[in-house]
Length: 283
Ligand code: PMP
Image 1 (cartoon, rainbow, N blue to C red):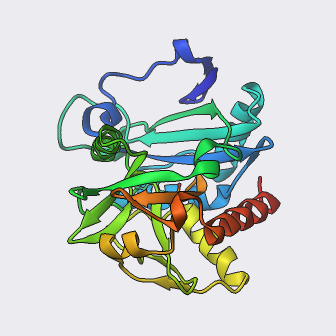
Image 2 (image 1 turned 120 degrees about the horizontal axis):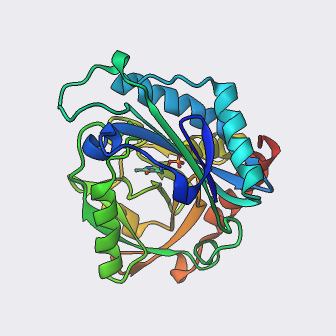
């Protein structure tokens, strides 16, 4: 693979970032993951908007323009021949001798991008659904910022795997916040889609927001409210959204089967809507 590091396209085994990079030493960095289908980027403008928001919240400088960032994405997609997969983009505060205090103005931000080629449309998750277990949400108070501080979500996912499940839903005070790397939704018996409102407790998912607008446009009723893990186990259907999964059906929660242990019809309808609508707008 060719990867991008600070202005250069290089083979992945020649790419270098300093051991003094604050991304490495302090998780002082942010990232975005955009899906590619048919060589085109899904929801790309929204990913750029969120990158800028994350950067503003942490006082990181984004030196590259949006046009440059799009051009780098396209160049990597083309060089690596990506038809279906993702582009990962990470920006850190940059390199400085190790110190908790920092002076952003005197530092050059580090910008790294790479691609991953993998099927997104036809996956075993989309066909068979995924099993979820609940794990306590003990993350920090700014989960709305997309930082590279991903140790706890990784641990939650490993906890899920060790319990024989595919992924974890994080629960705070009995209420579901979100998935380890996705937003969480349930579908009630009368077909209303429920998801937690945006706050510092969850990431404002790009897929979440796009799906909600497509769903609203097709007349689906949506309620943004908190819901408990108990309500989720009782729901007609459940699903997750994320840039690489799109809409992923959940077929069990803590061992309780949902929608007969198969992807639910409302979920699969929304998956289809999301894919159709986002492809129309792809870059
Ligand atoms: N929540 C968390 C904690 C995530 O890591 C992700 C994926 N990065 C999401 C939600 C989904 O966001 P998006 O739809 O923008 O990928």
